[in-house]
Image (cartoon, rainbow, N blue to C red; front, side, top):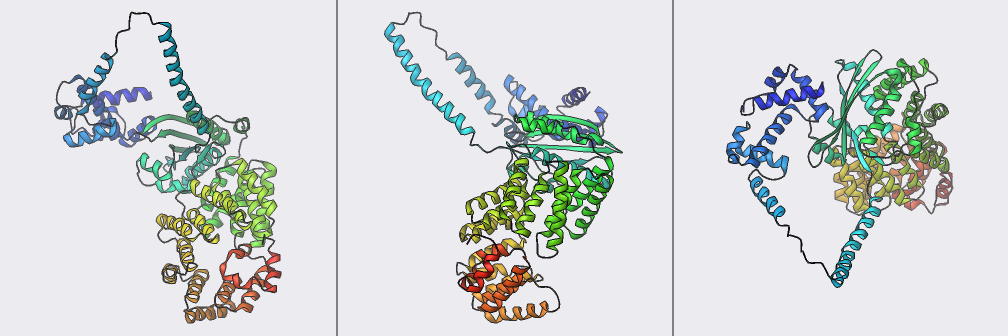
Length: 615
């Protein structure tokens, strides 16, 4: 049926080839399909818009006429429905790589090459000539073989094939079911990311292509990927229909594969596994025996449980306080409907770990993260998010570096494309003085989520802590290119200038920080203190001290400000308070240059031992 539709479309276009006014509306009317249905069908089957499909048919006919030399290129342009010869020339060159005027010339050159073959010599070669020819042949073959084997060995060092799964179109007609489209995209990304020889872009970086139209080439360049997956999802009751297509965007947009999947939601995991195997096969990735075994699973799910899980993760990933609470609510509903489903436990574990990644309610959140994560991995050992949550708990709450490393490595063994795991693993390496590994993990997170200003800036932040200030500035500027208002980009750039003694530049950067936040307000004040403007710094310190008597102010903020102003005793007092309560991010304070004047103090040495980090 699909091929019959394509034939009908092509016949209709050819019948109206010289009609430059022939429109998409006329085409859809002639083939008996609505414009929107026609667009979706051509996108699925050919990876092209309707207008692009019409244009390509016109250009193919133009090429046939040019090769036959029946008319000039200008005349042929009008024959195939182009009203402008300049536009025809532009489209022709874009499709074929050379202008229409070159067709005749290229054809003549091809004929000349075919006629240039010399007749064979009738004379039998002598033994001496035979030996010389053999030597000459070896002289040619050996370098070719060497080049082949060198190229073959170099292929093992090439970057892995990279894929981006774009947001799925929600064809249900119900905006409330957007969570289904987003959740299915997230699930496919997560499962595809478990294939070790792939680099799979995170969902966060693909979201900007959801509601806007971009050329596939531009998306691929921006995300730095080799192939793209796009598609749509339709849900009705407990039935799912998934339409996917694989696109190679270079050098010309090429439709590699299209497939429709129909399944009851109870079998959604089996359907996802089939999709992953199909994609891997089409991009010629050989699955390992372990990957094959994992994708052979056919576990069924409870429809209500899975829907609540998708709803939960949909809200959790939005990042707002209100959505976070909604997300945790739906994840708990999922557990109530099926206490044996591991996905909701893994989602809860990661949610609680993210909540505990900070000074407030840290201990309680991490306890809940631990309980949910342990339950998830007891139900399914392939829950990488659960292992990531356990790693974060040991990293930020218990300062158990060995356990954190074990859980991070286990999570990455399951899913080497989990950007959250790489990002937090970078900070473990950093606190353990593994600078190169820290930078490597931070860069991997930024490659998997290339449009995230946070991950781009983390690379700069670690460079700043390692006193590589010029590189820190360069990396932090990348985050501002992604989001000009991203505060932590200005934070890193400002401190890098500050520690280079460039006070005016540092003040200019830190003045762009939001001043309704104690942390950023203190950062500007510290910069004033270093620049010799102690009155401004002292005024803010007094305001924060007064505030701390009425509400909670992070003691490390006050410790940093006192240290910048040279108040050693007060700085040490606040460091002790933070150490007794294991406030985040205390262990990383060993890199803060503000505390350099304190490091020879016996009292500081006592505090430092509590952090359990290398000297």
